[in-house]
Image 1 (tube, rainbow, N blue to C red):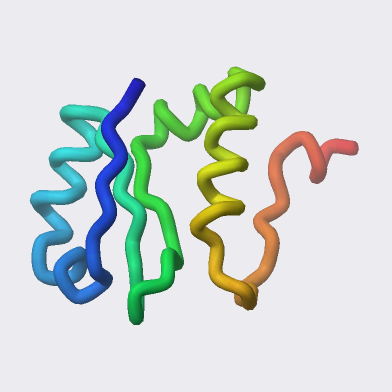
Image 2 (cartoon, rainbow, N blue to C red):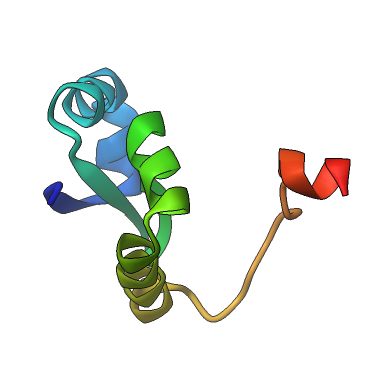
Length: 86
């Protein structure tokens, strides 16, 4: 399983290239925190695609996100290809 690291948003901004390399080369997942609240996750595209197809891994990730999710939500849901076809 891929390693998961937690990082402050300012540190992520200052080291984005290094983080991106770590994500791509080592399949590391980063949980980005702002004001000590988990706000976002950075993971490789292949890792994300695997999460969408592997139900066990998907459930694990959903549990991680739920445990670390902030109380509020922002943004719009992204429409997937299967939703736009239906």
